[in-house]
Length: 338
Image 1 (cartoon, one colour):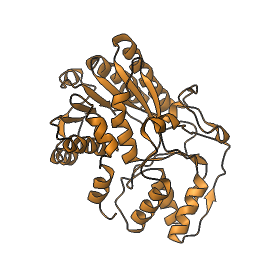
Image 2 (cartoon, rainbow, N blue to C red):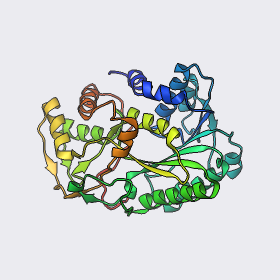
Image 3 (cartoon, rainbow, N blue to C red):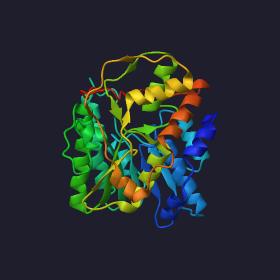
Image 4 (cartoon, helix red, strand yellow):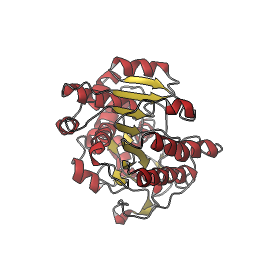
């Protein structure tokens, strides 16, 4: 895989399972917050799935679109776009109705020192959106950061594990969940809360960060000694298929890959592929932020792209000098300061 075009064609290819599910999906799809790291590929995958079944159902992407090139790119792929600042209530109320809503808007990085904006985006706006789309079905992106650090021997937090978010970003994300769940109760709106960590693209993500450190022979930080990851294409597919699994009150669903991965092991895999000398800083703790997504695997099957495949793809991408977004995940953060 040498180009962004090849990457996105691979990442947005709908599976047969997704195509079959989309045959059961009535109405258009509105994606709120389409301009983030995952939104563009999710929108393209959805449009390709509708095209595969010969449907005229619309995919509409909503974002501020500070990057006008993204707006043009989505439209070239058949995704309709609307520029909207969600904090402008008049603009929000003027958005079109849609049977299906994918809610991806939020704020993470830059929270420290700008907490008020993060809370407005992550906990206030969801309530306004939920009232606007009370007659829709909604999948709302959240994060595994709402869980506490747990002992690595416990196999991660499943959906029944008590939440205990660390830091204002994670607290505001739990606020988003609570606000959405309130409106799910109040209006009988069918929702699914999509607790995701960590999505992997060749242009950003946990594996890319570790790969770059190894390739440059920089010390690999073991502060977070274990992680979960999932290929972004698989995460997007799970999100789209989740539209058929919404409930009232809102259903919670953890989403990640099936393995608990050692940060040290990941670094060793890249070192072997690059032929680089490996060094580490810090030491592993017996606790980490880990997400048990066995329920999503029961619903949708295991991810199509395996960990070893992701490592191979990223190793080739880094070796070839592939384009990256330069957006660190800060997955090593244990105190919730983003």
